[in-house]
Length: 510
Image (cartoon, rainbow, N blue to C red; front, top):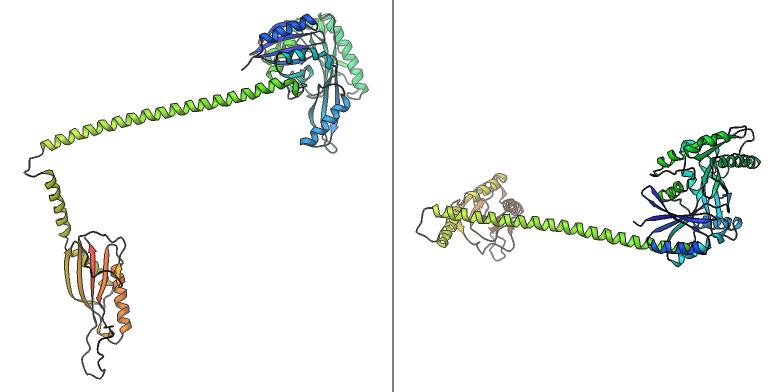
């Protein structure tokens, strides 16, 4: 981050302060003449990488309060620009600060309009800043910082704050925590007695003005807080006496500076360094400089954003590379461990093989022998699993009887299987061995005259038998002869009825 320097601007001169981590360093003061402007240019050239903030403490300023209708976006911006042009014509250093909405009526928004009314005082300094391409972050007015000066507990009701700088005695009127206006009274002498007399007189004038504007009550004393060093408190209390109009309170400058984080409290009652510290610590949301005056600051912001994004991308890439490198190292260690384990396993295998008894047969022949043994062991099951499966289907159809079963073990399926009438179970294997059987069966005698019933019963039986996985069923001979070339016999012949018979083939993978 670049260093931040505050240019404390008054009508007489410009003083440069370096603000670094709660410490303030006075780096020089420049008069508003040719020699001072030249020296200021040399100062900018020596610190061209710093961020500069102008803090103006001048008497030529104006404050106005306006209530505008509730609006947003471009409509609000247009209203604010129109109000600023109406009140502060001729100066580019004007801004509006929102102070919330009114609690009564149509709840308009209240604006505090502020302006630095003598832009000619700033032109010599801003021109030099432009010539040296200094990074000017903004122009601020000292009253903008006073709202953050005292604790919130002291910001109740109307009250007056008196502060002392090299420019003079400033009187700022607050209604609660909202600034209403501020004015600066130049002082030729900054001694405690002079400051006390000026504070008493200016506070009395401010009370008369506020009462005439009906901003405070006539018969109620105005709380007046004077920010001063503890060494000057006795002299100030001797002159700043309470009366029917004013109630004075001395606020210790050193305690306030320590509470706000300033590591080097001011040696006297002039609070220039404290205000510079406040400006860097918490800059106000609005500032007076125009867009062309802070162009180099916008460029710096863009460059800073790009560098930050590049740094973030570089850091992300570095983290990814470290992570990837760690994973690669871990994978390499795992691969080496796997290679070592494989080598140990190979050594263990060789050792075991050496201790096995020697047999008079080669490895290939032994493998073929084992495969043959597995095939023989598989065939040793015989037709048992097939007959068990057939018995379960016969249990489901008790009217069907078995006359004859011819079984065999084969490596290939009989070519007779396939085509119409074949029932194939799920996941039927394409390679054997298989147990296959040709079964002669008969139906009950009572179904002799029911040809449709015979066909239906045979179809249901074969569907049930062939529904199991790895089973193939086909009817080889139906219980009735459906061929058209056969001779029909007369029904008058007196013969004993015979049970309908049919033949089917079934195959099951061993």
